[in-house]
Length: 199
Image 1 (cartoon, rainbow, N blue to C red):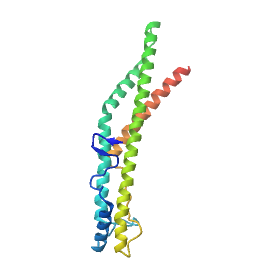
Image 2 (cartoon, rainbow, N blue to C red):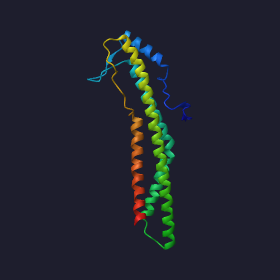
Image 3 (tube, rainbow, N blue to C red):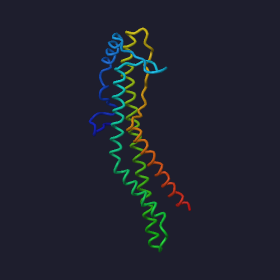
Image 4 (tube, rainbow, N blue to C red):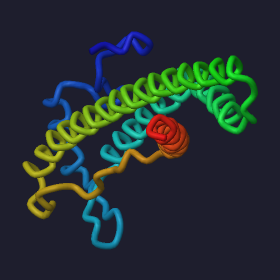
């Protein structure tokens, strides 16, 4: 699956993707030049190389979260308008039979539109989760190749480096907060429609 907007395949990591032999050679060099540093109480050791790669990974994740927020902004706006209209229709005082029938028809159309929008948001969220997990796996593979070079040269290095970053940048948190709020509101609105249908 290609990301046509970015021009690269899923999981391409700027600043990280390179032949793993180069990662291993970098690890050997950094071990020989004493680059290992503790990263915190009980968190093991790391190196400036790993910290730079971690920054690239977090920047990649943040970039795609912001891009998805921007891409879905018109859909979020339409959802907000549709939810407002649906709430107004549900709270309207019943009039004559013709207007009541028209209102019910509009409510049904809005519910269908909102259900489709919810499915689109779920699909986009799943695609983002897949992209970020693929990126994390590639990052880990490059760090593992690098660390194998560390182990060749260092007799005191632990078997694995410290730090395994969570992809929770401010951009990620902003995306997840908005997504969860909108999905909760959609669940509530669509559950209300189901209750009306059963009544």
